[in-house]
Image 1 (cartoon, rainbow, N blue to C red):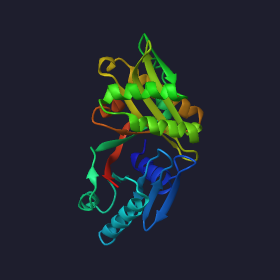
Image 2 (image 1 turned 30 degrees about the horizontal axis):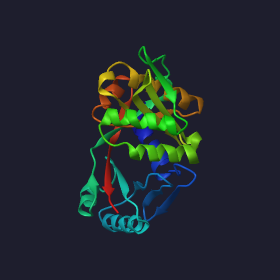
Image 3 (image 1 turned 90 degrees about the vertical axis):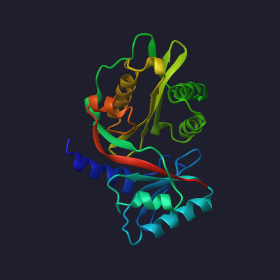
Image 4 (image 1 turned 45 degrees about the vertical axis):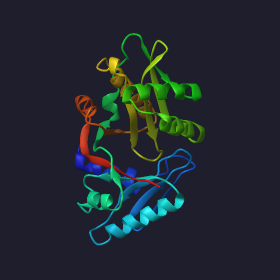
Length: 258
C-alpha cells in the first residue's frame, strides 16, 4: 500500500470532498474550511482546513461564531499533517479542549475477508430497531464504562434517516450483549468507516473484535468499498496492526462547547 497516496486520497475523498453523513445533514465550504452540519443526533464539526499562520486564528473564530450561533457543540478534527503546525495550540487558545489523540489506520477491505467467526457461544446480530440499539448501547457501556446515551441517539437517528449508510452490530453471549460496533458508509467514496468497536472486559482477547471487523469487511466489499478506516485508540492500534492495518497519521478531536 502506498501510504502517502492513500492519505492524499483520504484527504480528498473524506475531508476536502466530504459528503453529508445523512440526508438531513449538510456540508458547507467557506474560507478554507470544510464543515459538517449534522442532522438530528448527527455530528457537527470541521472536517478539513487549508490554513496558514496568517489566517488560522480568524478562521477558527469564524467557526466558533458559526456553530455557537447554531447553538451546537462542535469538534475540530485535527490531523497530524494539518497546517499550520501549531493549529492545535491555536484551537486551545480559542477555547477548545483536546480529547485523546488517536491514530488514523487504513486497511484493504480485501485483506480482511477472512473466515473469522466469533468464539463459541457468541453470535453477531445486525441492529435494525430500538430493541437492538438498546442491546448495542448496553454492550458499549460495559466495554467503555461510560454512559452510552449519545450512541443510542446517533444510531436511532441514522437508522431512521439513512439506514443504508450504517451497519450496526451487537455480539451476544446467550442473551447478554458483550460487544458492539458500527460501520458508516458514504456513497461515492472509497472508505468505509469502522467505529465504536468495544468488548466487555471478560470477553477480550477471544476473537470477538476480530469477528466484528470481518463481518463489516464483508459488507463493505459487497458494496464496493476498497478501504476500511479506523480512528484507533492506543488499545486497539496493536490489534489492528496485527491484522494488517497501516497507520497514516494521528487525529485529535478538539471540542468546543455551546
